[in-house]
Figure 1: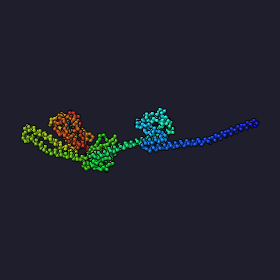
Figure 2: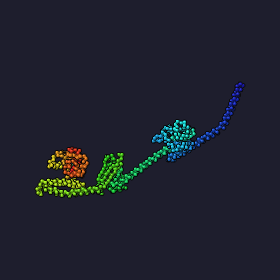
Figure 3: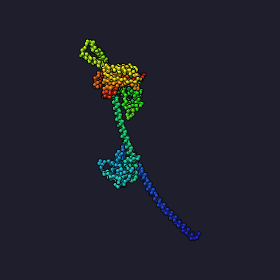
Figure 4: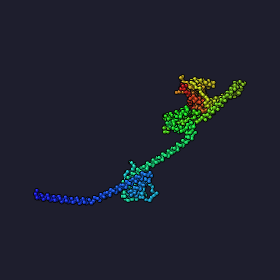
Length: 599
Ligand code: ADP
């Protein structure tokens, strides 16, 4: 190595040494300086963090207080006021308000407020009502966002209301959100510009969500409360109505028995207890079937109808009712009316009404008995009067002059009328008193019809009143089951009417045919007919109508009632048809059960 080279190396080393010394120095100085700053910064950060923690603690405590405040109270107004008071206290606001959406008219209503910042307008201010989207509250609700405004006078969203809160400058507004729904807005105010911090806004937002839940709960509570109230009053009025109806049903003299859809008895009144000899406590909740035996065979149709309706409610046709007169085993006669209870197409059960008509039936029977006795007693003198008048007319007591003959003929014809009346009266009253019994046997209706028509033909010959008579019957007509004499009487009465109420040269037809388990007899004429207005009354006792031909013909108005009674006794049916137009006549029809059906 040369001297020059070693000198250069020496200088280089020297310089390197100087640089290192300088660097170490600088480092040392830096280290000293850092050592002095480090504790101060740390302290500050610790202090800041501590303050932050205190604030967080304070905030958490506030939230907790708000939470317990709003959830503990069911009085929403009180809870909201307390919350706003706490909020004001925590963030130093001068006033807090809550506005809620009214879903009925879609507006925003002032709901609660707390704090002073308000001019002395007490009493004169109407509560704030805003349209949706209107003002700052409207904006917050619409945008679902909280806002912090340093000076409301510089914010276009702020709606300066004429009297209310003219002093506020700083505002925080946060939406009240429940789930997806915004239900209102919470706002705090201060008169100083830029008073609130973002941290305050977080606080208002957090409290807002608690308040929203509380309001929602309170509204739910109110709704449930209202509903419960409503249901309660409905229940009360229904109970009152039910008791009232029960009292009415209890008070009626008729027996009332109600069964439900399962055929179980769920109401009987005291009259039913008396009439049917039942005890309510033993029958309620029991199936009606358990009591059939008690009422005897007579009530079978009644109980069967109830069972049929409860088993197949669809079988019930609107208008179907059931009414029957039954004789109980204790000889009491009861009228039973039965109707189903149907509500909105649903079968709810049946109502049966019982009336004890034993007394009425007895009175009726006594009346018929009386008429029967009187008619019977009248028959004997009548026969004798008639006999002697006939004798006189025959000249048995000497020759009669013309006048005497004429007078006696009048006596004779009136006696004849009287005797028909007495006989008819006797007949119907004995039937009604239950004193006529039928001696049933197989009958050939064609034979009976031929015989009756023969009588009418003779009559027509004697009276010289020509009439065309026709019998229309199939050769294989089955026999019916009836009382020969009475069936003869039925047909005779109907054909006699047809003959008498058809002008000369009319046509009378008797038509016989088998219809299911009966033979139907139609007696058809082309006489004067029966006016529609009279047709309902034609089977009433003593009804004769106003047709001149009828009035000119002697009659009692008892023929058809007797016929009807006799047909009913045979378990047949009777009806009539007529247009009421003279010349179109009438058709009287009745049925008698087939003999085979009886076997
Ligand atoms: P009566 O014949 O004695 O008057 P009915 O009881 O037999 O009593 O008949 C009652 C009324 O019915 C008669 O008065 C008559 O007005 C009417 N009537 C019955 N049958 C006929 C008929 N075939 N044609 C027209 N009217 C009739």
